[in-house]
Image 1 (cartoon, rainbow, N blue to C red):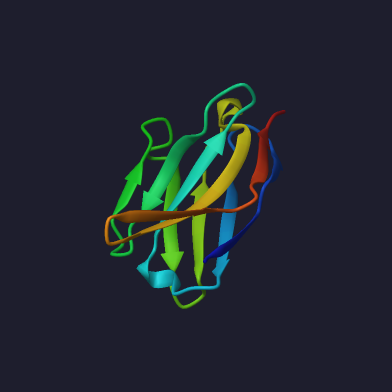
Image 2 (cartoon, rainbow, N blue to C red):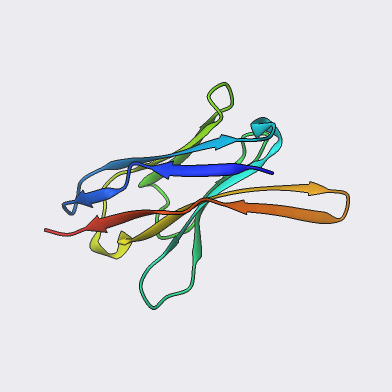
Length: 119
């Protein structure tokens, strides 16, 4: 079991920056692939950025070059640095932890943090 707690959301003006944090507890953080997802009102949840246990990263095309995902295994925390924010980045952002155990994929979610980009 992994417990995930997100923080860092809020209201920011277009062009501004925010850094989201996701603190994990309950298991060995370093073995998990971590991801940030977002869900805007009326839309499906989508992957924003992911980082594997080995440190490889992947980004949605809409955020590439603006967002950076990173992890600090010593602090059991994954971050999402969001720069040049746009109104279309407004959504609830969720942290995700996943790992394979044999043929079973275990997935855990945080409760989400709201990001609003508006002037």
